[in-house]
Length: 472
Image (cartoon, rainbow, N blue to C red; front, side, top):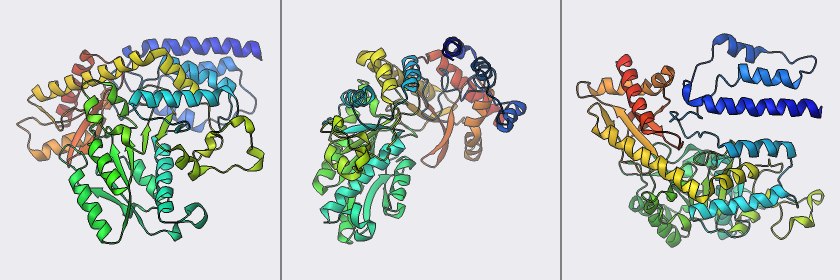
């Protein structure tokens, strides 16, 4: 068995290296042929086992030729990163160890505490001992953060929500913008807060939450007898990468004694770009921050992170230690499972550690700055083009724009832009996605791959024009 594994592992390493080396020369995305898709869908469970060498060949011929495409330098869709080579190695090694990283005295637990601290240091967030953990992604991080915010609000009202439940609470009101990620609403619904009590505050034309409108709405809600408890700010919205006025939100939350949660899943690392950095003033004053190492850092999926200012608030929300899990070796900070929902937790920290250690702080700063610089250049290219329209100024590394030639009426522009992203994808040379911003159909290009070049940007715009011509 060991010799078979060794040979297969070497074959996998060569296969992956060839796959990554050949990525730029291939189409970004290729639809799966119906026969290949059906073969995967309908394959029966083998009666007898398959040898490892045969499995490796099946992966090479049936899986790797049909990727999502996010490893390609001309993939600009959603916020899906190319995997960092060091992270791939870390993932491979972590699977061989295969612990449950809930707690105890083993390397993965201590490594997670280290990489959470590293992430906090990178984005300039205060890091008390125990003030964060790795999660499956920002969606889970948001659930954990909002649960802590809910329980703090309940305690301030004299209610122990863990014992008495939500029936003992008046409705709690949270505040978001129209650009706030959908995971916040999901978290509110799952935690029993109700999406009806998640108030959408007006934004400006670019999508920034309006602090003055927020202040007025909080005041009106208090007068109406409601209980405000939460504000969610964005450090890089998913549609256009804009950053809310986090300093103003932090001031208001401090005055009103509200929990400030910042969604930095995609954009928190934009703080490392010298041009974008001033926009992030106030981030360090949030009560909680969600960010995704599996986005801009390129850590293989899945890996999110939650950072909090008050570790005891987090632990008090989730800690439940049955007798069979008592372990003195966990130390004063206890188990990671006391700070979140997961009991069995995968060894996520090794791939984060490997990715960050391979790049170093200077490498991360270089790559983030390059992506932001490329995005600003794409914004200039769009602005200079008579047939394209930039929908918001570029703040981080997402560029939202639309096809808008002077000889096309607004109805034609709307119709073409509504399907333009998919049409570009199907051509295979670049990959963008569609969205709606300010009521207008658009395409958005997210640049988080430092291997992208200015030539790749020109290919993108050529493909947008060609696809639009076909749609028109």
